[in-house]
Amino acid sequence: MAATIATVTLSVQYTPPSAPANSGNVSYQVSANCQAQNVGQIDINPSDAPATLFVIPFGSINAAKIFVLKNKGSVDIGVRLNGSVTDTFRLAPGGEYAYVMSAAPTAGTLTAVSVAVITSPAQVEYVEYLCFGD
Image 1 (cartoon, rainbow, N blue to C red):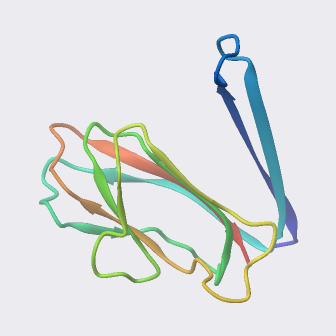
Image 2 (cartoon, rainbow, N blue to C red):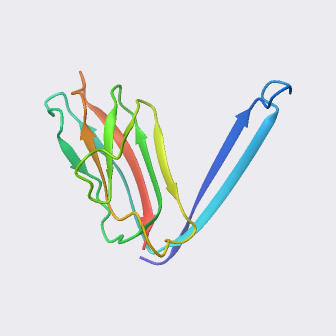
């Protein structure tokens, strides 16, 4: 795949102390040149028992520069980074995790992500992922 540019924009609106409601606004934008991408979703079924682990496919990506994970379900999911055998953190329903770098760091790169079922959902639910890197 030819190099592409992936861009993430994070905007935050808030109320600063002693200021009008929602008058604080900050926006950050990060772009990264990437040689590969993998975008998709993983279904989590009612039959998936707690502790079932799903590996997010990185494909040919050895080091992620931009990785976004969105929990589209109704229950928490465990998230494991870089081959951890325990949950690094939990992602609540509707929650998002973003790892955003303009270039891969010299150490501590993101090389793998997996999600773990905490509680089996009542119906089929899913997590979305976007992975860009080299």
